[in-house]
Structures are given as structure tokens and as C-alpha cells.
Image (cartoon, rainbow, N blue to C red):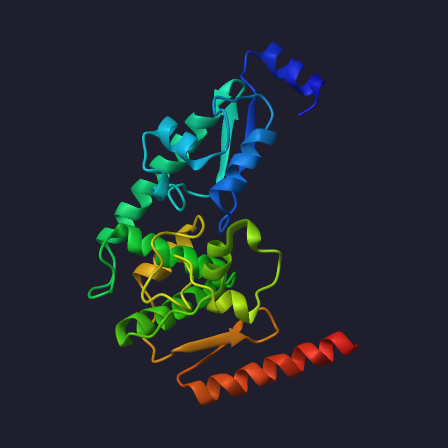
Length: 247
């Protein structure tokens, strides 16, 4: 908004509103960085440490990730950073309660936190809306059969600042609380802020026998029911990527 537009709003007696956008699949640390850059916000947080944010919101620091609803929020000048986070937290709580109440029967979740954790993994695994419930089915099937989830986004989250853009075999084999190649079941909490579509997918997965999926090189994924078929799909993907890079 320009100074002239702001003056016009003031002259009209209306209060200017400014947008701040929190993207689906982003992490709290990215939200805090966004708030630092947003204009006309009253900054009350002394730093970006989770403990500081948790104290201001009267929450457990271990429950912050995944606790805020991603959306574009409008605010007026001198709105505090904490009040925006409180709005996003209230919206997420309301939505999760609603979806939890209407979830499919017999899902392997102990509580709402498990559902949000699953939704955050789905959010990071695919940006294709039509695939979300199918991706959910893979992880649900794995949980039910005792297979490890083996999902790369959890490895990345567990690496923290050590992640530089690529994952090595050593990274997959290095235990962290979030590395689903080394732990069984869901990680201890969400790895990002999931949107409504991923929350709905976690609550209403497709009924399939799929246990594997891999990128198809076209923006989506190929889903398979056994390791042999999965390995073939991986080879197809690698060949497609090789041909693409050689052009």
C-alpha cells in the first residue's frame, strides 16, 4: 500500500488493512520470519525461539508446529504478532475438532495430534489435491501392517538446520525423533502446518492396498502394492529424469 493510498483511507475514516500470508506446508519458523517482515505489526516476541512463542501463547513448546491454520490474515496497524498467531491457532483448533469428529472409523490415531501429524506429512508429500487421500491410504496401510512410514519429509524435519537441500543414505540411516526410516509409527508431532485438504485426507483416506508411491516425473505419483512393482516405478522415474536432464 502506498503512502497516498494510506492517506486516502485515513481521510475516509476507514482503517487500513494489511495481509500476511502463511502458506500450507510451511513451518512455524517461516511464519515467524514472515511476521518480522510484515509492515505495521507490533512486535512483542523478543526472539524466534519456540520457548518464547510458547510462553507468550501459554502453550507447550513441543506442540507449536502444526498448531496454526495456514491462510491469508488481514490486520490493522499496530496489531501484535501474538494476536495473529492466536487467530491462526483458534482457527486450527476449531477445524481439527470438526474434522476429528467426522473422521472415518477405525483409523490408527490415538488423538487429534496424530491426525494433524499425518496431515502434515501428506501436505509435504504431495501438492496434488486429488492424490492426498491416496497418499494417506499408503501411510494408513503401513501403520496397520507395522511397516515403517519411510517418508523423506520427516527425515528433513529431523535434520533441522543440517538439511542443505539433499538427503543422503547416511541421513536416512541416522536416527532422530522424526526419522521414519528408523522409528516405528508416526513421528512425535507435526512437521509443518497442514491445510484443510490434507487434514480431510488424513481423516478420510482412500480404501486401497497401496504400500508404496514414487514421483512419476509429471507432478504426481505412481502408487503400487508391492516392493517389486515399486522398484520398477522407481526405475521408470529415474530414466525419465535422466532423459529430461540430457535434453
